[in-house]
Image (cartoon, rainbow, N blue to C red; front, side, top):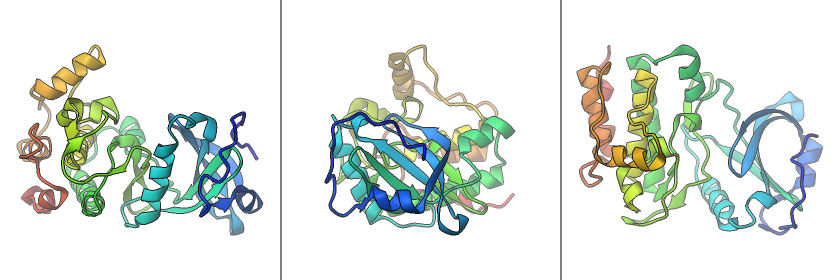
Length: 276
């Protein structure tokens, strides 16, 4: 079936609520690779009546030093359901592997789209922004911080856009000290400083929308240290971004998290309601 090669010590009984992997093997056939992450890979799978799902395949050997991370992800994905969040259907556990079956977003990621077609139209960026802010507002109302909003995790279906991958997500109440996590080009100044709250997702969304509009990133560096200094202190080069879009992105990417809007506040910004 093309399962991940296993050689790890068993972590059986990871959760008594998970279905046995044997049920997955009876119902689904793993297919082509969709993507590879630090601790897992995602494949397409064919199920009953030729139905298609995406499957996140986690090998326990990859997380043996971080079991809390996958437990946290499972707890979070079981607790959420929103039209702009990729839905996880079932979780299957074997002796060495954990499989999460989820909604297949057949139109690829925002990163792939921009790479192939270049910048996204302003009107469509508005639609993407509105839907992703609605998803973040939902998550933040449940005190869930995604912590890895980036173009690779923004996926398209035939008629919708969704946030995926809750591998770095965590419950968060207020502003606290946390480990620096995320994808370097998209993390906020306060994540670099080490004390942050759910508004770090708003900054990351601003970077994502900047990328969608321009097909470039707002910050670069010769090293991660240089990049982090620029994110924390340097002004963005706004060339090629029209004033209305710049104003909205500045709103989302205020370096002071206390002055940055919540998702609910950002949804009320007039830029989102102005048609072109």
